[in-house]
Amino acid sequence: MNTTAMSPLTVTPLGFIPDLKNATLVPFNETACENWKEIHHLVFHVANICFAVGLVIPTTLNLHMIFLRGLLTIGCALFIIWATLYRCALDIMIWNSVFLVVNLLHFIYLLYKRRPIKIEKELSSLYRRMFEPLHVPPELFQRLTGQFCNIQTLKTGQAYAAEDKTSVDDRLSILLKGKMKVSYRGHFLHNIYPCAFIDSPEFRSTQMNRGEKFQVTIIADDNCKFLCWSRERLTYFLESEPFLYEIFKYLIGKDITNKLYSLNDPTLNDKASKKIDRQPSLCSQLSVMQMRNSIASTSDSEDGLQMFLRGTSSASSLLTGPAEHLS
Figure 1 (tube, helix red, strand yellow):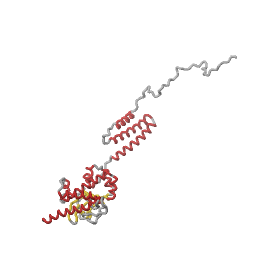
Figure 2 (cartoon, one colour):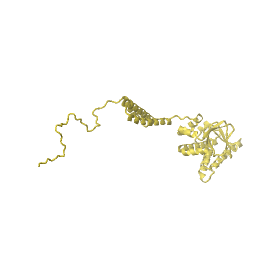
Figure 3 (tube, helix red, strand yellow):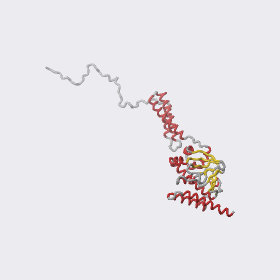
Figure 4 (cartoon, one colour):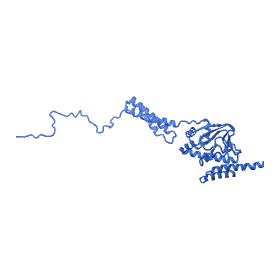
């Protein structure tokens, strides 16, 4: 009996001939560009030009971030137009819409930060003379003068402070208009002119010892207008702004020094005080020395600045005393 061994291989039926001529060859790399497509619409190229220009803007340019965000916004808008009108590509339109919103919000925020800060007319001279030379930004000055402070007025003869009666813990003021005179027990000490602190020595003494009273009388010699801060709220604000805190330390120290110079010559007017000689006289040197020694010794004695104020007033009375005898 003859048996036929079955082969596991599939046998091609007779009469079947593969059609090799009509076979389609699939390339190994389907992404290979055998035929370049036509160039895209001009809108597509303009959008990419906006991206390229925005990315090559140097960072040294003052407004480079505004220009960058603006060009990116324009580029995204052009891509949306191109994808919608010429390619009908929904995914490209959606992604560029998201990018458009993000860049547009950044662009609006940068423009908002660059907006011109309008300083009140009454405070413009104060800013130009005291704060602008120290590089205080207008927006920071606006925050300083827009919170917890107001503009007050005094008529001629009205008192800003009375010695041994008015507390020094309540306020800090800068004279904006007019003139004030400072006296101690009836003896004239010096004048206060616009763009000068009214009570800078008292503010300095308050930092050492609370509950003090004014040791001098301050009276409006003209119709005066001054900017007045709440002492407690101003101190709290300056603690949150270290840069402005240092600015105030400098301005108050400078103002106290100018008042010491004016003790030597109470007849100095505003223009002359700007051109005052940098070489202090003997009286001014002694006054400055007393102030520095009294402030330095506050750790051992709580009334250092009060002794200084009394010492300067005594020195002033000694200066006026011989003059009276000579007359």
